[in-house]
Length: 634
Image (tube, rainbow, N blue to C red):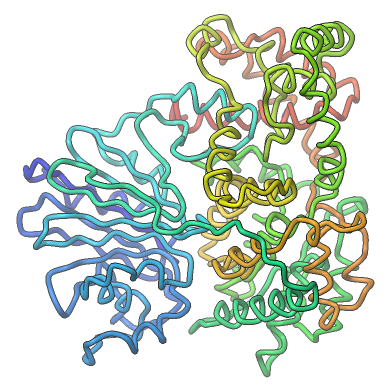
């Protein structure tokens, strides 16, 4: 786990003060890799690579990066882990390895020009390899999007980095708001590739590779695609397969030369990870949980303690107090140069801090299971209602438009009105990850100028692109609505929300987060299971829970799911209201985005105790704070 950066002047001109700039890029990512720092430039000085190292495998200086191939003149900077590097190492022709690192294995796999080498990698990664002979950069990102990678081309210079703020150290990189990105952000509270909120700076797609040469980007394409054809295997066979895949994935993710622990909520996913980890070590693993003082509705500590006792872990807890919460809230945007208006970031921050304080450098989590195996109760509801939505969509358009117009006069803020409007426009029923403002209300508080500039944008395009991809991969054209929900989770929620926030928050404390459920074999096999075995008889994650009955007690498996929530209303309302009351006037008068009176109306509703407006308040609070930090550089 590290931070990587670099730039390449493909017009062949040398870059003035290139070494100083690459060191600055490294410097702002020191938290991603405080153990070592390295820079390198080629002889022409038109290519510079930088690296900040968090030492996990081969802690010696032999793992230093940028790393040079012993076979040729290739050079790599690499962020992540290749868990099967020992098996891959045996396939290489050379014997005189200079290190025991996965970085060197990855570098030499590329040197031997194996066209399939990316498909053989099991892990989470973002890397760039400079090929001096071909005068090309090759970049790639892991299949699930666990490791971040951003890039831009400005002034005929291609630049990349693990973090946006590193790119801002380059004097030719501009910070200009991408209004289309912001328009979609208001709906989803996160951003999908290629958007980053900065015009001309792009987020690298998961499962893609890129080659940059003398004409700029020469190719950019996926190297991995899902097979969405479900199998007809019996439930018991699939249960065994799910269990075996997870066991193998956990075993791979315990490979480390530093201590490995786990976040533990006491729910199904984290408990399964902890149980499997405990079977593979002779010493108790460290598990970490947090609660909130005096806020029992948000506390899972009792459940976590039961699981920790069951599997004999060294369990460490932190009870977050109101003052801790209030101290963090104004600082959270320091971590997120790519905005994520998700309050769950707050407990993950404290968990990562707790792991760091207790000497755990690698953490395993249960992220991804809900999306892959249908773990959300509202998905059960969506699946039940969907046939009726389809039938309603076949009614004459004039009827559907008339009903939505009539209902809008009654309650425009209602979810029902949102569904009626979607049907009127022949849009999909389910918008993955759309936890921000409803489309039917979003435009009410945007200025006329902003709406004019964004008139051609439609946030449904995010879902529409996912649907096209899903249909193109579904060769049998079988209708499986649950697997469509899971697919949106894989392609949208996991990389752009969960993996993104885990990476940013763990790395803020120089801790590496690993997610066994995001192993690409588990992902592929999850999509070979028909949706009816993921949600069955009202039970979410049915097939996963059945597979884990041999490992976990029923009181863990079938306890009512409790989301990973925070007392945002109880502890954060005053902070957010105070900040916005001070900032709204100056922000709205200088930035042509929001109508001040409409946002103040939201403030008043929150102040009057209407809790259903708290997430709206959080989105606006986060966004204005983020803008002041990263666009105005306050």
